[in-house]
Amino acid sequence: MTGDAAFEIVVRPPADGSTTARLGRLALPHGVVETPQFMPVGTNATVKALHPDDVVATGATIILANTYHLYLRPGHERIERLGGLHRFMGWDGPILTDSGGYQVVSLGDLRVVDEDGVTFRSHLDGSVHRFTPEHAVAVQEALGSDVAVAFDQPVAPSSPREVVADATARTHRWAERSLAAHTRRDQALFGIVQGGIDPELRAASTRAIAALPFDGICLGGLAGDETPEQRDATLEVAVPLLADDPRPRYLMGLGSPADLLEAVHRGVDLFDSVLPARVARNGQFWVPSDSEEGGRLNIRNQRYLDDPEPVQADCPCLACRRFSRAYLAHLFRARELLAYRLATCHNLTFTLDFMARIRTALQAGTFPAALPGLRLRAGRIRGSEAGAKSA
Ligand SMILES: [Zn+2]
View 1 (spheres, rainbow, N blue to C red):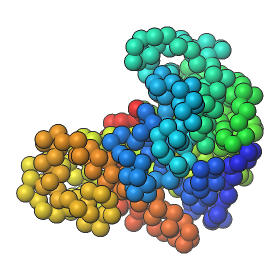
View 2 (cartoon, helix red, strand yellow):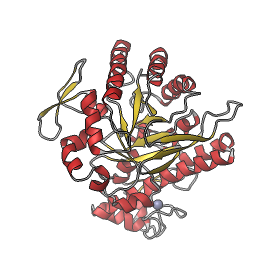
View 3 (tube, protein in one colour):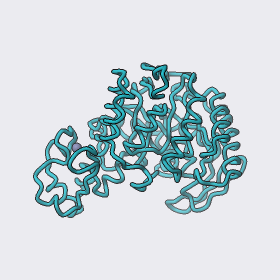
């Protein structure tokens, strides 16, 4: 790695091939991140409904912020003038910024992709903007994140092969331009593999991106409309090609415990998703799947109105330490703002505790053996079922 970032593999996968999971340590300018790790999403320079101290209390050690959203509002130049993103949002830990590619390409009303970049319309006021690889890097350098990500052209996994091939080839050209534009030594830069779920395209993209001097490898174009089996198969194409690669691997947009576990098993180190927080704000609390509630508790259900128990008895979060299911059920019905804070604290705590359990098993050398128990705890909630992807 260049600059101030370093990734060390602490426990390698066993030689018997029973798992590709590994334990790692990613040192960044604002702190150390133990991997495998999940990054809560702070779309608008805030993890929705939480104070930064709440975010720390959930166990988070790194968060993601969205380049596209901060570029549009309040503006990357303003954040830079105010001392950078860490100071602006009162978060002293590591921050990863995405490239904006996903939002620009998939969320904008108007978007025209050409060889040089993407022209898009703001979702806020309809104004017209343009991102190029160079501009996306400049915006992230102004924000001052610990990790920046190269600008890419993501497409839905189910897109026709020629569409995926075209976007993937362009992503490779943009990767080289992103690298050439990047100047901050105190900021790591990750490249993005595309290639959809086509094994040939995915393998070619993995080789192309891995050949470039990025500090980490993002696996993009997944956590979309593919099936879990297609995602697993795609990881089994990409990760073996990176077997001897010393850099961290980051699967963008994946967030349910069951999905995270299967991707860790196949060799992924880093994740982000709005999923745990988004379903929390809808009143869905994640609990161990082998508990009475069976994986999730919908606090709007009538039967919790008189329930004096906490959501999850052994959970150390802000909600479970102090409040009953009955109180939370009341807060949600009354649409009280505290409901969103407490629910978000719980789901992020559950997710980050789940990752900690995975790391504990990896450290102890019991990971493949621990898989059934971890699968039982994770349940079968998968991203597509819960229905959420990005901001
Ligand atoms: Zn809790």
